[in-house]
Length: 406
Ligand SMILES: [Zn+2]
Image 1 (tube, rainbow, N blue to C red):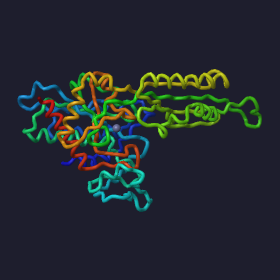
Image 2: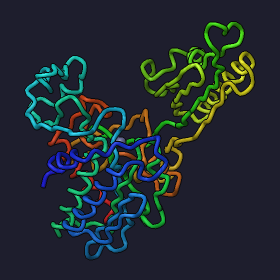
Image 3: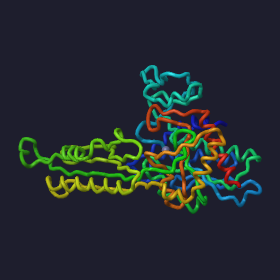
Image 4: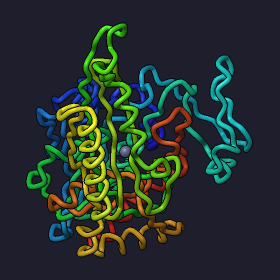
């Protein structure tokens, strides 16, 4: 079976994670998907297929004969998809890209315009998997899941592929920053691993943001508007004042490369109360601390004006830049580069403007660079995957296993 065929099958599971739910996995569909994957892993002949109560799915491929002493290598992907856009009733379509715009949905006039998505130019003549433009595809990260399982199937089926013991890990709730929370690194038992959670084949990423989440809770004072003079505190307006204190150019839509940001992800409010959610990001840890200090100064300032307790902040660290945990294991980068080149590609490392399960796992004792999956436009309706590129990413998993076999 080809990796893209697996992706199409997996797309039917609506596995969006949900930040509001404290349980793990945060949504039951992730567990349904994990159970189906566990069955599939058993069917292709994996060993030690174990799904724990939190929805973490692990499996193993025993070492080929003579490779028992090779280091245990892990491959990891996440099973949830972004909650930002619907993933219900995903209607996939496979097409050969002939260049130009792609009409995803004639009826609703949803078009992926080549001018808006220059990445498309590299895919003329290739086989693409798209949606009808009303949902995510969920290739982030089901493309990664599909490639790891396809590679596992081939390694098990083809005795000429020499590899050490391989561990496979599939995690829940990555998109809400909790993918590593209950990952049992000791039980996983790999010396190091790769996550498959990037975009293009050839990506070998080991630098990520330092990340924190900020919740702003505002308590207003509601009073009949007719007699509100000098008494009312409108929580929604205090919320908008808070937003206006943040530097307008330090937002995702105005930043790139190593520039960090404050990103308002949701807001709700009435007169009585208001709530804002932000994510704060920076590759530089000291600069992220600076952002945290700045939002605290904003809260102090507003509380001076409107009364103590009007604005309350909760700041939670999400993950750290994994570079410092990965560079001591430089072979992870060198071998990934060698494997990409062996498959005719040119490796590219760039500072990830996001994080992966690997960012946190790297600090939990499992160094984890991130590799591309052959899918693009993640977290949006224009998400697509390329069948040929997914095939290369699958081959990359096998090539790495071979390199570590010694
Ligand atoms: Zn992802």
